[in-house]
Length: 237
Image (tube, rainbow, N blue to C red; front, side, top):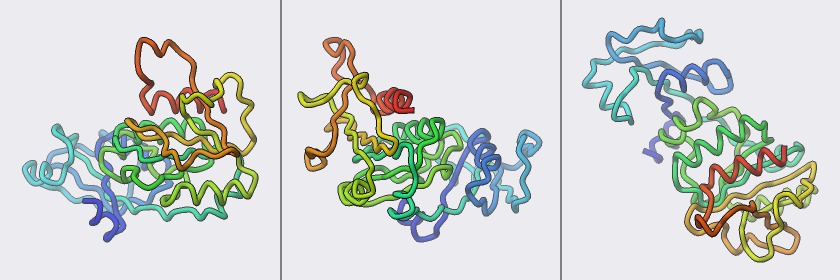
């Protein structure tokens, strides 16, 4: 599926809430809508003027990526990536993901990042495709709202750091500072690591600050990546 998305330049957004929010945001170009035969477009609160194609239930299920289709799918144009130079000119918070593999986690992270108004998203090598259907559904329509870049994370971080961005690594290691002891920079990059392995050791450097969330970690091994991201974004904001 991923290679066809890249080849065609389109992705699918499925479900009433997701499609409505994408329409309302107006950030992503919708090429067409696909509905299941008999589905009532009056269920949509957002206005649309895209071509609409109706499929029989059996055919719609073949197109759908869910077990219980909601009857509507938007075919959307994949937004262009922002350049590292353009991103470097912003301020606030940039969120970077290092090999986040669970689509639900990434979707929730993107949705949370949009809520807190981050300046952009860096999707490091090994991170699940931003336009994977499960990621798109989990963003609840926030897909395409934020500028994004993909590629080698360390290289992007170094480029941004030359423009006075400060990198914070979400990690519970011995050299980590407690979140409450951090005074975030006006140009902050927050790096969130892989669900099982954390942040790649190659991303640690003396110029980058490791940050941990204090808690009763004798009860559980770690926080979910999306939950941890939400806590830090709230503090940084």
